[in-house]
Length: 382
Image (tube, rainbow, N blue to C red; front, top):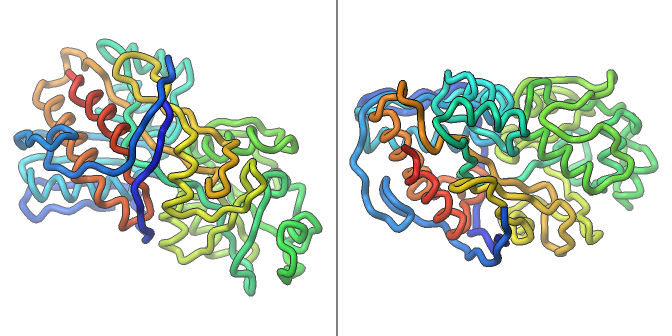
């Protein structure tokens, strides 16, 4: 299934490390086959189906954890849901995709957040935890941005090969010939580069390294939620940590979900796509990138999306991604029916009215057809 188009989205920053919504009326959150044809626009409705039918509020407690990429959206969803359904309690821990999957497999969270698909061993572990298959349900989309801190340099263009050599510690100064070749006419200072990368098991790292592996022959570190970063780079935990590191370090550079760069008022680079076009990260460019992605389900009710990092459209931002929640299609008997009903209700809200928050905090609401498939997956949870 080919993804056709995303609705327009805006930008603003937000970040969260631990999100917890309390049960009162003023609660707020804290810190295999491919078929064609998806249409655009996000659905808007009360908790219920993507078509807008309303489901009743459910009491109980729900716990999720994982992706820092989606944490600001989880914060908004929790706050919005609890404003309507104050008898529930929902917690989301922003601990990274890898840790979220581990906790889901262990049964310590009810759902996981992940920006990348589970590996085969993770899928097997998650299926074993569930009373049936564990599935990926996309909940929002966005882009991984490249941001930097170099006084006097307010805009940058970066090719995949240049990015590969920077993040492998081979390009060590901002006035290198490779960066200069990408940026004709830009005055680049003699300044050491400090690379920040994720130290935790990260879906954002998975997206970034998958892009480099697909687009640069110079990239030798492979792809995944963790890679063996060179010793002359610095690790930090979460999108929060790497963006803070760059903000505090002259000469710093990192990859991070857009909302975190915007929160820190950090610039975002134009990235060269496979068509040779340097493209900014914005609503339309994420939409263009998703237009060449495909939905490739692993099992009934799974809504896995395969990104095409080699899209050639002049307007396609190449480091774009959806982000998922991972849930059981059938939860084991030791999970209370009320918890399952709450999970369905909460995720239905995220896929309907919750999509409206994307435009305010730097995410893309999902296309209508993806929302419908995601909602069908949520409706099938038992």
